[in-house]
Image 1: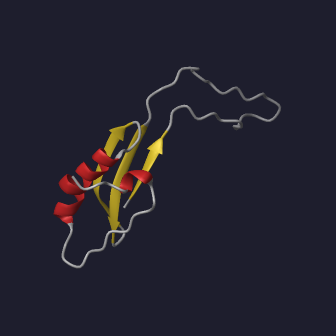
Image 2: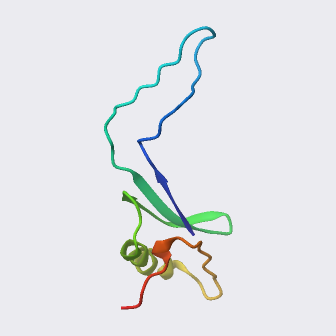
Image 3: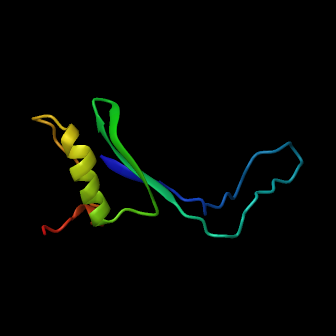
Length: 92
């Protein structure tokens, strides 16, 4: 499983236009809310997808595990995660 985000604040330092014409990128100048998502991959298929505003935290990750991912796993499935700080949920 993994998570990814889309940040609308990206700046594009280059672009394409007709030869000899300057490229002008539109920038709002205002910060916008990011959209993130996470899902699992099993045998080439994505499952248990979830999107959320801003970034992930331990509570959101734990809720996704309990409500979305774990109910869909079969005996013998293995979960592989990276070392993101919010993956280290503390037991209650």
